[in-house]
Amino acid sequence: MLRMNKLPKPRLQMTMISMFVVVGSLGLIVFFALSLAKLGKLLGSVPEARVLLEQAQLGLLTELWIALALMVPVLVMVGMFVTFRVAGPLVALERYLTQLAEGEDPGECHFRRGDELRELSELATRVGDRMRELSQKATLTPIPIPELPIADREEELTP
Image (cartoon, rainbow, N blue to C red; front, side):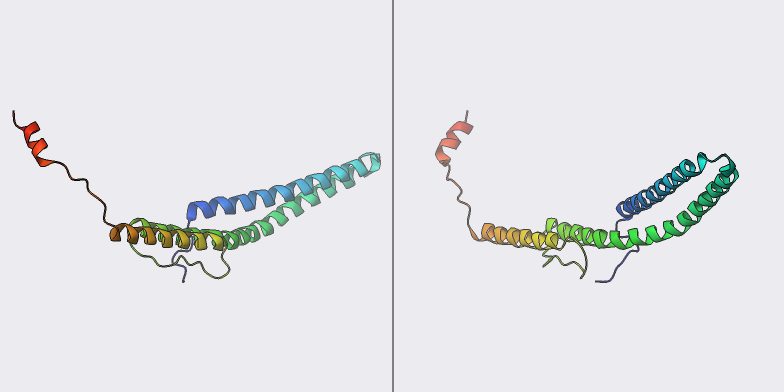
């Protein structure tokens, strides 16, 4: 099945991609903050190393910005790759369930090879099969309608 949209579930995907970027960036910032703290602890006790410490801190901050500038696009691409493996199946499942709810026969619920949530498509197919089976039984089995005594009803209606 070909992908119709660039982002099948834009809101979900943008949320997940943002989480990748935030968590990855925070990890990098924490790493650099710990490095700065350790460097300050090592060189802070030596009075002559103050200039060296300031230069090292400036260098580390510059490297942090460069690392973030390189890491954010990579995190966005990884996030998109991962979210397509989840959002695509959700769109297919939504389409399948919509067709089923509207009384159509969507056949089997299929996901692309490599997509996540394959067990969910198999379960949806089983549910759809069971619904079709129950629907066929309901149309084949006559529903008994109790007979009402007509004479009694006429007597009730006449004043």
